[in-house]
Amino acid sequence: MTSANLLDFDLEGLAAFCERLGEKRFRATQLFRWIHQRGASDFAQMTDLAKSLREKLATTARVEALPVITQHESADGTIKWLFDVGDGNAVEAVFIPEDDRGTLCVSSQAGCAVGCRFCSTGHQGFSRNLTTGEITAQLWFAEHFLRKHLGRAERVISNVVMMGMGEPLQNYAALVPALRTMLDDNAYGLSRRRVTVSTSGVVPMIDRLGGDCPVALAVSLHAPNDALRDDLVPLNRKYPIAELLEACKRYLAHAPRDFITFEYCMLDGVNDQPEHARQLLELVRSSGVSCKFNLIPFNPFPASGLLRSPQPRVLAFAKVLSEAGIVTTVRKTRGDDIDAACGQLAGDVKDRTHAAERMAQRRTVILHPASRKAATPTAEEQ
Image 1: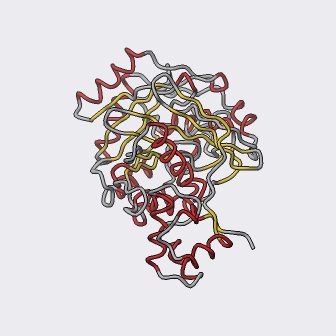
Image 2: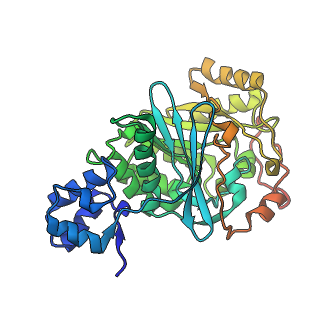
Image 3: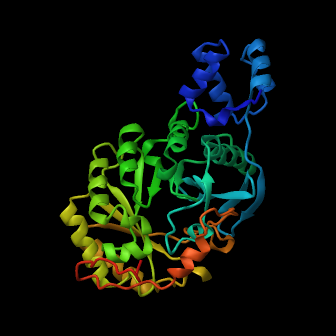
């Protein structure tokens, strides 16, 4: 009989598992606290559980973390782990310490099928979705490792961002139980405002998340018009900007914050001109979406064929937005000396999608003037 990995369950799932063992619901709550609040993986340590239950768990269950392949620590305190998820695949998670918070960036897939031009993960291709347990295990390991590493008894990780490898909303069934565990007061007790799901724009799943488990939402926008976004974020061809903004507006009715964060990777000569900033303003004003912009310095890698926008141009772009009353931040680059910065997570993926060949064919970005309406892309542009 295959034992169940208890990291795969949110509290409701664990209660159902305990009921199958003939146990009361409160036993699931006790067990949940031992696993997530105390980091216990040995049932013998769980001394307030009945001996009969511990014996049942020993033969039917396990708490199985992901094997750590490598750990790298940046000069700025950022820590990156490479986790083995089997069958030749590995995923990365990153801890980013700040004065007022500790943020963990978590992966949701081995690779990514979206294929954004500026993202190293997308160039790795896609192998498979992670399980709930594999998503939760990244937080479970990081939190309890960091407490020992930093000599702290209290919680270290205050924020989780689903911004690691993969498109979280394309792994929805595994994502939501993991989010519920992060939010549960019997586990990590994170505020909905401090758990962020980042998406490239899977419109139907944005709507589902709003109903099922609304947390903070970040949308990878990266372009002010459909023609340019089609080149940079291929998912835009299925869910164009107008549909995406309508979904964002609907999400705000459920969101724990009163704004959507739009992520915008600054690419030299591609999407970083003042006219692009002005068109962004027109977009958000006409859509009525309350938002803030997070401008992200691009972290170059050879296969992308792209370069980082110069800092003066990034600041000029930010000025256009902020002077129009849009809250705009420029993300600090953290962990770039260990390839842990935004867009650099690549892990090790057995690609089933032939990404390298497809991305090579799209190496040249077709530039479209920001001031005119996007035309239908030609066959050559696609």
